[in-house]
Each structure stands twice: as C-alpha cells, then as structure tokens.
Amino acid sequence: MSQAEASRQEPLEGEPPAQETDGAPLDSTGGPVPRADGPATRAGGSDGPRTVAPRAPRFFMSPHRQLGLFRSELTTTFRRWRTLALLAVLAAVPVLIGIAVKLESGHGSTARDSSGNGPAFLTDITNNGLFLVFAALAATLPVFLPMAIGVIAGDAVAGEASAGTLRYLLVAPAGRTRLLLAKFVCAVAFCLAATLVVAASALAVGALLFPLGDVTTISGTRISFTDGLGRAALISAVVAASLIGVAALGLFVSTLTSSGIAAMAATVGLVITVQILDTIPQLHAIQPYLFPHYWLSFADLLRAPVYWDEIVRNLGLQGLYAVVFGSAAWARFTTKDIAA
Image 1: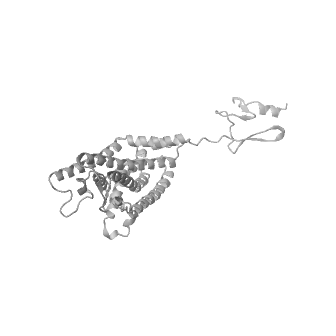
Image 2: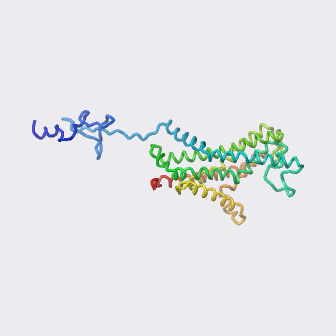
Image 3: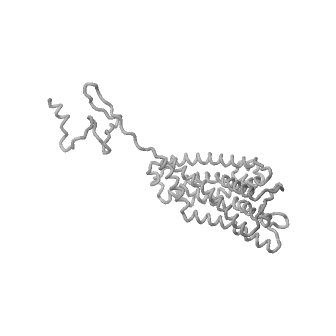
C-alpha cells in the first residue's frame, strides 16, 4: 500500500473516523450526507463513480395535520372572550327588538310611525313571531354584523403580530398561504355563526312573545310555517354570504399593520365609510360596486315567486371582493417581513 493510499484511509489527527455505508458517510438519521454542490458521490471501483441521491426534505403535511391547523384556528377564535362577547351582543339585539315591539303592541300602537316609516318587517311581528327573524337580520346587517366581522377579520393577522405569536405560527411547516387561508376560513365561519346566532335568538324570542303560523309573503300569498322556516334558513345563509366581502377586506387590512387595534378600527371605519357613500345620491354610478349595496336584497326571498336578480348580483359582488382583497392579502402577507 502506497503512502498516498494510507493517508486517504487514516483520519487526520483529532478528527473522528467517518461512518460509511457502501462508501458514503452517514448523517444522524442514517442516510447519506449530500454534498453541498449536488448529489453525494464516491469512488465505486471499476464501474466508476456511483451517485447517492440525498434524502428529500420532509415539507409535506399530511391531510390530518392540515385539518388540524384549521381546527386549531377555529377553536382559538371561538374561545376568545372577545368573540363570545360579540356573539352575546348580537344575540341580545333580537331580544331588545322583540321586547320593544311587545310593549308597543300592548299599548295599542304599531311598530311603525304614522308616516309608514320604520325598520322592515316590524309591523308583521305581532301577527307572526317568525317575522322577528327577518326584522332582526334587517336591523343588524347594516351596523352590528359588519362591525363584528370587521373586529374578527381585522385582528386575524395583526393581532398575532402584536402579540408576538405570528412568528411561532410560521415555525411549523404550515406555510404563509395555508395560515392565511385558515384565518380567512375562520372569518367566514364567524360570519355564519354570527348570522345564525341572530336568527336563532330572534326565532326563540318570537316564539315566546308572539304567535306562530302561516307566513304572508311580500307578494301577498300565504305559505306554510315550515316553508317559512326554510326561507328563514335560506335568508340566514344569504346574509352570511353577504358579509364575505367585509371579511376579505378586514383580512387585507390586517396584513398591512402589526397593531390589532389599528386594524380593527380601520376595518370598521372603512365599512362605515362605504355605507355612507352608498347613501349619497350623487354617487349612484359607483354604488352598485360597493359591497353593502345589495345587502337587503334578501327580502326578495319572501316573494312568490322569488326575485333572484339582486340576490345573484349581491353574491357575485361578494365573491369579487373576496377574490380581489383575498389576493391582495396573500400578496402582502407572503412578502411581509415578519421579524420587523
């Protein structure tokens, strides 16, 4: 054996001997250590160099872990005291409306004033408690529901950043896109939960304080109470879908700042501003493109036959806002310096 061959086999002084498997050193997992400039290679005798492929990094998340991320975000969102307080306030609105209507009807007056103005469906509550569901949704949709959604969506990312937990959420191989999608799903889930809380509270109060029976539609026809319940459920779903645009807008605002309070205030302020713009007659040209413009179109579900035109426009507009502001939120969040 020549001196050069002996020097290749003997380790240097102070260096531990390398473990080998078929000529390739092992890492801590028992696999070959790849070279920095490509696949690991070794001298393989007469047949030339042999290539040893490096192990692929384990970035793939199993479906169970992917669902676990969404489940964790939903659990965290709905366990917060702020979320429970918002749902409690929304549940109290139908109670207050029902008590007010009951007291007014007990004094022999009606829910509307003599000029015929007043919130929609209030005059029908005394005859059928199911109309309290429609009245409560009509009363909470312009103000209470979008403000609650703005708080939850606005705090989705900015709240994690201000609390210092956003970087820890990104340590796991979940990825920014999947985390942002989980936050949006939580906001949409809260839209549905908030709407159902209002509808369920109104139905319970309406059944307790007023009689139930067949429903007289806006068109003047009568439908059964079961059919009325089905339309109430459909109206609740449409109202929840009407808030998706607010959720996407709030999520985008939440990616622009690291202050949860600032994001919530900005989202609620934008919602109020857009609704003011929707009431100015001089801005009629842009009003069909504002997300709250078709919110009250759910009343067309109480017609016979149902008028679908404005309902479809409303759902399409909310989908457009979700795509535009959801894409903007993704573009911002995936390039945001989390450490800053």
